[in-house]
Image (tube, rainbow, N blue to C red; front, side, top):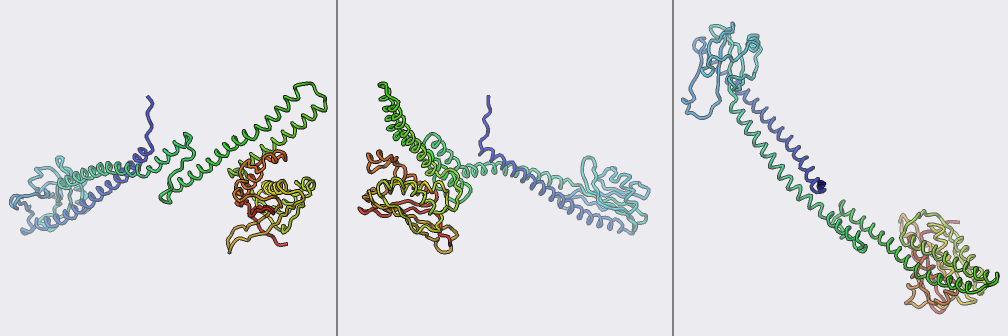
Length: 476
């Protein structure tokens, strides 16, 4: 049977409980050791006071050594610390002792020898299993020199330390349980947003890509993670939506040319034809294939631009060179229809972006202006710069306007002309080879660069498209 692993909440609670338990155990140990040290130090101080009093009074009868023993019952009873005294001659024989000792020797030979050398101090002894603290002294004021050993039993101190140890152990156990409970509650509350994020992520994983996480309540680690996840989901949604649109658009737009190519092939195969007829058929198929390749390239580039993916290393690109290249692209068609191409105000203008993409964006707008212009009309391209406001540390803007003398665009269609495959004149677009992707691609490229593309004005006298991208006018 496979053992189910502990949840993160349980592991977090266990680790916190173990850490707190170790810390509390160290604190209780320090308390116990401190109390024991201070209590024993206080006991030793009282023992020295008791010994000095006992030894001083033991020779108050004319220098004759004697004991002072008063039964506790004569003092009214109650608790008391058991005292014992034992006197030794310099030969080591016991001279006097408390009745409680009953002939048990307090000092061994080594301790007696140190006391005889006046090396006195407090020591621990054990008498019939009872622990005691003893202090020694060398009595020289009596009728004969003696060695005195005065001590007290530590039964009360030992009992007190045992009770303290039991209390500290109970505090540790209760504290550990309370800490585990509180830690579990805090972990559950802290991980509540994570559970919600997990539930939302599960719904997103099942296909609900429009789902988003609730806005963060605070700017903490979970709040920042929530914002980043929402940004990631938004980008993922754009990618998926772009791929869906790509598939839908491609299937829709490729159906017509593929059907036409299949028809061309079927017609050519119905009967035997001459080499010239086959050549004409292949040339028409080649033209269709070129159109399909162009459409596929534009679709892929449009998806990349709308997703904002790919390498975007900004370079300084001369705007005049881009415009002149676009004009060269349409020069043959413009001459055939007697359309005049002109540009002005482009000197020293530079745009910041990817040269190939900027060239495609400008070219598409110029091609559109020529294609939907009147025969004998004009296409005028002008440029200007818009410096960044104030002392802002950011690039300014370059504005490029492409004005034609075409029939104009109704106001309600100013935005629709940027939709994919939108054509105001479908039959003419098919005839002239338009794919309906040029303006959509140019707007996506402009947005990718942080710019815009819009219809600024349109009337029966013509239309003005305005393209803005980061850039500036450099000094000559």
